[in-house]
Image 1 (spheres, helix red, strand yellow):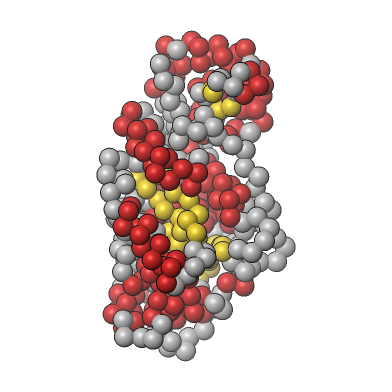
Image 2 (cartoon, protein in one colour):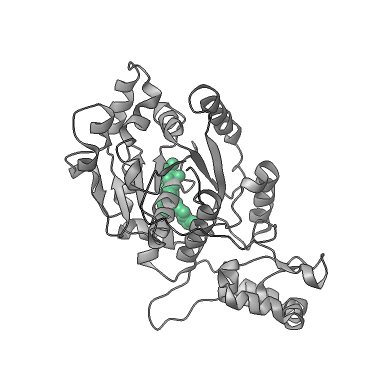
Length: 360
Ligand SMILES: Nc1ncnc2c1ncn2[C@@H]1O[C@H](COP(=O)(O)OP(=O)(O)OP(=O)(O)O)[C@@H](O)[C@H]1O
Ligand SMILES: [Mg+2]
């Protein structure tokens, strides 16, 4: 029997209400005594799960539910993560004493509703929580990043539009502090769609965002650009300004549809505009660990992208839509929920992959 990693869909972390345990995880552990027995005979595995519960979110709920890879013999027992690969320990670097120059990362997928904005807000908040100085750039005229952070994008005096169109406004005057310490926002609103039209006739139009961000990158460690769901000029600007691309992929049947177009666009930008552009990672979102289907989709994503796929996977939980309504990241809305936990884990993995010593 396959032992899947389960994470509760929702965990209510209000005082007084204990964690709701995914009944499937428990049921599975009950019907498969080997899962428990295995954990009993290898105290090291239990100890490891206790020392670093971050190894797997399911360990928080029921460490005995951790599936183990026993193929390497007793010494080779490692937890298997939701992507079906051994879940490593991340060597997470410390934020430097002085910020900058920031790593600019485009959060990009032309498919709508895959978790770009949710990932930008919550990865940003988790990095800020860990001491990194983070700027979020709203590069979608919907202004969802501002909304998700409790700011009304339509009442703003200045937005990124002013920086793209060279209106003379200083970049620092457009940046807003958010309620999260260490997390700032370069907001946008519907004006950005006008900027896209205006840029078409400009010289070096693909470099407009890179130019606009230049005065800001020295003040941050990470700049996350939340792209709109299209591969138009704005997204090409984001890819030209970026050192890395983070691709959120919804774990559903058509997840990989359209990804070839995205990778072809990244390749074109690399060839023609930004030779150093890297794919920083592919993040599975809205994963349902209880369905075989979700696991199959993840297996196909790993087949297609290999090590670029984050070991951490974001499960589907109603907590994320709730955070949008509340206008805050999940780390403050539900700090000890599995959702907050998973994005903290993504932040650790992201930092380990891309924020180590050396040029960003
Ligand atoms: N892990 C998740 N579980 C459940 N709902 C989620 C999850 N992540 C995001 N959502 C919800 O799905 C919807 C789409 O998410 P989000 O806005 O982050 O996607 P997007 O890729 O930015 O969309 P767009 O392409 O329109 O910009 C939102 O209502 C969000 O709250
Ligand atoms: Mg969005």
